[in-house]
Image (tube, rainbow, N blue to C red; front, side, top):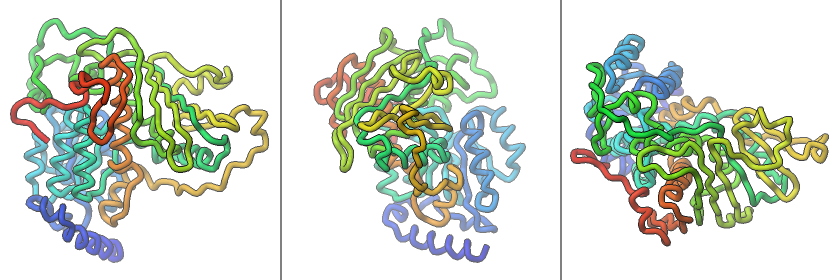
Length: 433
């Protein structure tokens, strides 16, 4: 414990000298209020996916104090408070950020409040863990990414599959050249979200729910149980639908293995475009330029039933969602927990390269320990920002109804100014980044 505390004091001393930290200092104490020298963490959201994040971070008991919890639902907040009895409770995360002893923040809200919560936390000098996708719109994602870079804080997005062993072995196979040069990738997810019509009548807001705070920055819409607490992914005003949800998980694998970042063009096809509800199915084609050691890449996304041709029948059920790398010397089929080299007869007796990517200590723990001891995380915002932007660009191309020529530096579709309305965020009065 003495060694850990010494390491922590050294890291905190260095952090206090950083310009960004100094500028953001009014509420930051970096554990000085903690008698046991642990990381004091505040949680924005405590139920459903946010509840899993709360449990995951709190499980690092040797290094974490659950110092504050916040939720807009009294029932969810009471349940969490019954477990974390020493944590201060809040309904509004902006009030929680005034608690001076907080070192780090976990944002587990729906997509539409990720940006306002994450950027404010970073600018107040806190480290941030944020659920995926990083935000609802591309402009918000870039704002979070820039804030993380400016402040130098430790960040991690909630793509926990990235920390599983299988993804590491797949990345090693691709980078070792086991299937040759890869110029084509297919990514698919079964199922879809959306395809709904707006609720016909507003409903009475439950007494335990602060709906105005749940809406946060988005323009006001009447309350409906179709939005809160679980079905908000069906609607553009709160999310990016199935692609926004799972794109950051499954596209993470080719992004990591092939060093992808910003696409050159994006083209999408799907059902009739609905102004409010996300599509139940979608096919998106991304074109990427050549990178050092990698040729240009065509990446195709599918959800709601589509998938590439040629997957052996014996693997069809197991890989109802997955990634297919097509190389000059073979193919690699993968999902969250397994992978196989194809054709199987060609790779009979193949010996995988000796593992060189270290196994993770755990996705949440990785972030916690980086906050305390310094060092990067594997899904920091500099990596996960472009990953999220790529996923959301598929939605933009679909909604704009046109193949986009992407100017990543300026967040513009060069050939489609009408796409701006789907790229830039619009906040209601009283909310800003």
